[in-house]
Length: 163
Image (cartoon, rainbow, N blue to C red; front, side):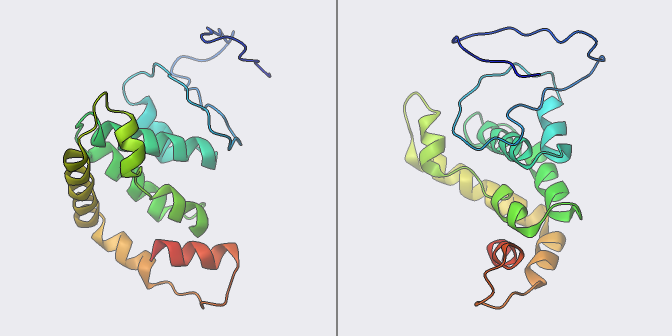
C-alpha cells in the first residue's frame, strides 16, 4: 500500500498487523529524507541486524551510530549490527563496505544544538577502537579478501572498501 506523506505529521494505522510488527521505512529508497519515528525498545536494533532491505538496514545502522555518537549510548547494539552485517552471507561486499561506515563528524555535528568538534572526534575514535577490538576476527577475515585494482565490479569495489 502506498501512503502519501503530505503533511508534517501523519499517523497511520495498519489493520491486521501482528503484535510486535516493525516498520521498515523507505524500503528500496535512496533520496535524502529525514523522518522521526517512535520505536519500541529493541526495534531499531532488530532492523539494523536483520532487515532484508539494504537501505532500511543501512538507515537503522546509521541511527544506532548517531545514538552512540550524539547521545553517548553504549556501543553494544551498533557493534552487534556491524558484526551481523560483516558476517552475513546474504549481503554483498559493496553493501557491507557502505553499511560499516560510521556517520561523518559533520553529520553528527548537525544533530547537536551546539557542536563540540573535540567531543565528536573523541567519541568517533573511541567507537572505532571498540568496533575494532570487538570484531577483530571478522574484520581480519573480511580484509583477507583481495580484488585486483583494475577490477571495477561491484564486488571488487566492495572488497576494497572493506579493506
